Image 1: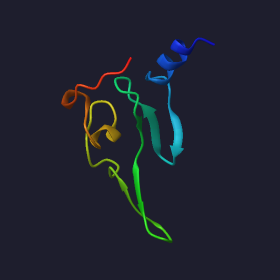
Image 2: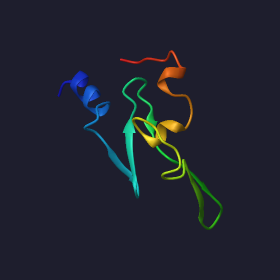
Image 3: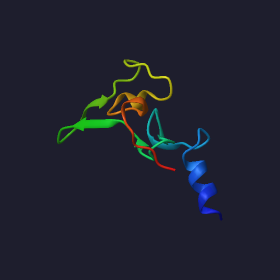
Image 4: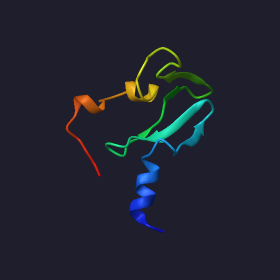
Length: 78
């Protein structure tokens, strides 16, 4: 298998992971970061999920509302 083709596929819109119920996990094409929700929990239960579903709008992924986004950084990989 071609490593370049695999890398391109992992960063494409065609790839997603079923990591959490209801959350589509993907890699950002521009920096390779895995986008995933932040789970807040105590010893016995899940307390909250960030970002809250439907609370923030983003042109690509609701998960991009966490942290620094593409227009705000100079980081570019591959």
